[in-house]
Length: 348
Image (tube, rainbow, N blue to C red; front, side, top):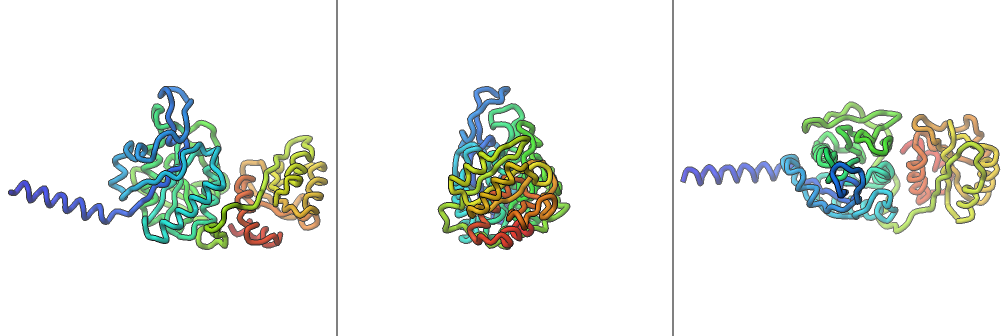
């Protein structure tokens, strides 16, 4: 009888503790974290091969941190992440929070386009509850796979009350990064993500979440970009500037009726005479042109080496070309006014 009473007490204590844990929903999209290879000591693998349940089963400790559940949104390598996937994720995240289905969300995602997805969601999620992206550089079948640790850390950050109101975050290799500023810097190493202009917001280590700074940029519910009822976004292309480049790529985007072009310029968003002439023609044709830089850090300054007012261009500030494309697509859902579009880049 005494043993039964102790067992019942243990069950009741576990139930009470479990009920107090935050609810974290994991939305899986595939990527290396769900990848499977033929051999543990080889780099080759198929991305998105494992379902979300397999990822959770690899980290049983995760259930001590939060009440975790999972949904499969997509099963692709992040090179195949599309605007359709973005819109699906956005719709589901907003629905989850609107219906109070979870207190926080973790998204497992491939690393190649994670920086774009994180910024898109940072601008379009309508709630201030934690949304965390994570992934891995090594597939689940590899020696020393980094996915389980990253997933555990991401759930830990999502479950922390300190993560509320910080916009969308990326957790990777124990670092906590702002979804706007984070970029991938390595093709193979596990320390693949940094925020080159600002550094990490904090770190997660041994189950402890510590923040050192906060982003001052507007995000989530502070932005005007509501895409819940959209099925497509304006077409924005990226053109890469290099020595002796000609105007072929710019002209091709104009001919294809793109709404805007981001130029990954050299240095402070600069480009040559051939690009200059093509940009003038593009702007006259009604195409918005944004100057960004292929340089890995720093910002593109308005009205510096190029007369943007005369030319009719805007600048990306400190967003890289891929992220500038994201903001420009969303900005064009609201306005075509260049001054307003430019202001978006300074605020968001």
